[in-house]
Amino acid sequence: MAAGIRMRDYKSQAERMSKEQRKQVGIKRITAYCIAESLKTKLLASFLKREHNFGPRVFDEALYAMYHLPLLPGYGSNSNIHSSGLSSGEYP
Image 1 (cartoon, rainbow, N blue to C red):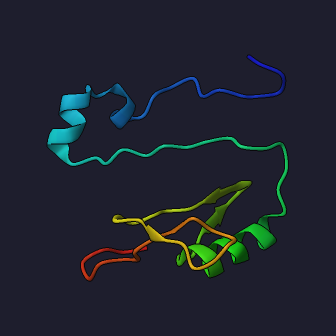
Image 2 (image 1 turned 30 degrees about the vertical axis):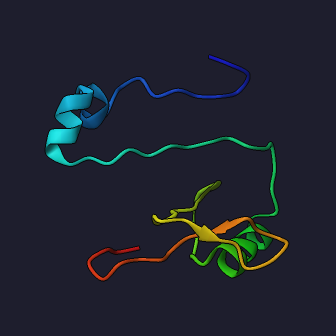
């Protein structure tokens, strides 16, 4: 165990599946990044909503930001890209 990081002792059903099985069932890929020790979460969430065109979700100490393809050019000098938003059949 690394410096205060607690790892789970079990794997979820999706983690036990092969890549082909996950694709067959329709489980989409999620990528998560740890980018800093601390962030001003409320300020970051408002920036992402304003500049990247989506509403990030905060769960516990994590901020989840779901981008929808295609990525579009940014609105100004503060952002290079923004999300295209939800299509009609998707949910947040």
